[in-house]
Length: 304
Ligand SMILES: Nc1ncnc2c1ncn2[C@@H]1O[C@H](COP(=O)(O)OP(=O)(O)OP(=O)(O)O)[C@@H](O)[C@H]1O
Image 1 (cartoon, helix red, strand yellow):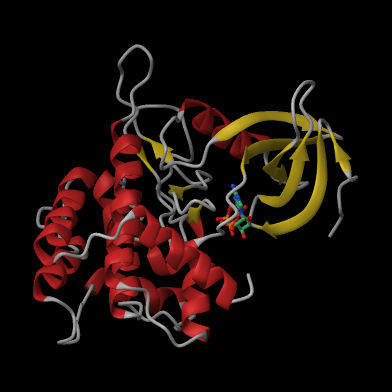
Image 2 (tube, rainbow, N blue to C red):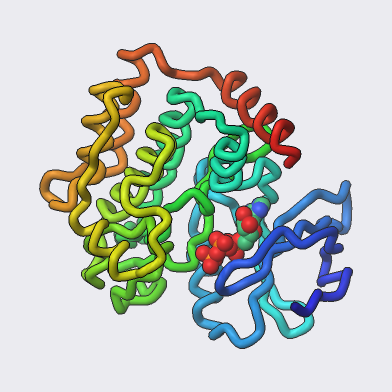
């Protein structure tokens, strides 16, 4: 893997954070003309990736402005490679935290699990309803809601990121061909069929994350590697919850994971409302301090 030069445009690269299908992500210092340097996540497009794919993500991120969405600071090109500079989220992603809990044989407290999903739903509610400046609905669907795309700031803010496969049916954003482009184990039934997507598709994917967080296991064949077998299990969406799961919360998980679109939550607001009511009724709403202390403890126990 080619390492870019240490100095990259107005950024100085400190370390490599990871890589995805389209790009590599680095932790870098931004050196502003005035004022102090600050950390950014610098996403550099891989060589050979079609420019349009990256340009779509840049265009879309430029439209977004919500506290629960990863914020783009600027985009540009240096040494022939397009880049996106984003806020750096030093709490890492939810996948890493879930793996840390598994290694430590601990469970994520249910109140925290539900809080994380409510925050992602705030992001999705904004995203799904976004309009152009002239008021035209963009009809956006994220298409890749999964634990690797849910991030935490050091202050325990929850942010949804990675808009690489987002689609806008009313706008010319993202692939329009209905390809199942999200992460396999988090696809919705309609995504596995290549059908056109609605916001409810993102809600199904988040339902899988909620199940994983609350029950401690993925609802559909997490360890299966045959794509067809996984997609069949998603389409059947048989959910069997252990008795230990609170009944009310279980009903919410089942409704989010209904294959039939008419019976599933239709909007992020409706799904979030059900979870908020549950937290209030069950006395499970953690304070900001509780969430931050859980995050810092997990990061420190796991040596992250
Ligand atoms: N803003 C950010 N702050 C901190 N880490 C980030 C940020 N954005 C991405 N990362 C990390 O960088 C790595 C690569 O991210 P990226 O979004 O490119 O890939 P991915 O989600 O693994 O794959 P793909 O883009 O193919 O879905 C991941 O480990 C991710 O957690």
